[in-house]
Image (tube, rainbow, N blue to C red; front, side, top):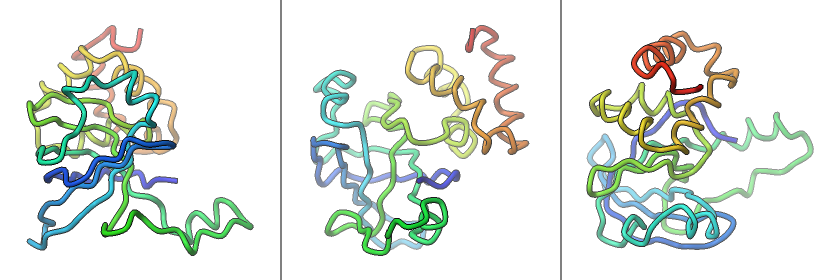
Length: 180
């Protein structure tokens, strides 16, 4: 349902909807072309959010956050994957230009959170401008991030990508016991 290439979104939270099946954080920021844009970023479902995120770490209107996110596949791609289903009328939340699954959220404090399970953590690391050490610290400190990191090695998109395979090996050599 999602593309395999990460998109980094940085901006100000203008709306946060704590709902099911997924929470939605609306982010306003400047696109690469300088235009102000709004993105809808899917997050954990309401019940998971209550379990996994403290009130202090919940996105609040006015917070500046950064997300490693993965866009949805086009209606045409989805129709090929699911013959007979009609994706032509699919739309994002009103007032947004694009919708994404937010895989990793970087909070105003700089702390990272695995936000939504849909995504490829190694692609977030590979495409990040942040220091590699911060990602290693994140993997060491977050059981959910470690689980996502270890599970991704089975994904076909990771197995077929030399850059991601190389990154997996680099991280394994830095944290030998990461995946048990």
